[in-house]
Image (cartoon, rainbow, N blue to C red; front, side):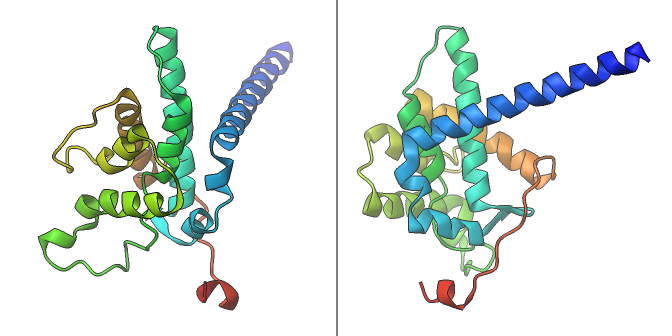
Length: 189
């Protein structure tokens, strides 16, 4: 009986630590990018599916969280980065604002994987004053599909986190809740 209580206590402690970690990551994202999280267009990404049943919004939040986690690991090795720009770039890396499953794919020049980083950058620049690092994160996160590799540490971190999250989401290891349905008022926005 004591073994079971000990095991349950360890599990409860592990869940508690994970909850605290996730809460702290979300708070840091909120602190660095509340303007993005609360924006009308960023919230529109809740209606577009990214991988499997994961929305673009959830995917970008996951990429931001994993980017911060990678940054924490690197900091322990004495490698620092600009966390504010890391978070903002991670949230905006897929800011293309359309459902790529329904978007017309005509010829090699319109393939989503190759074209969406530039579209995301154009959309983000319309709404936010981006730093050079944030631009680099957004436009090069699909490397090696984008020919030029990232040129800053933050872009490499987001590129890595994006690949990892995409893999977990595609194989449904990270599960989403599906895209929300638009009501009549949202369809006209």
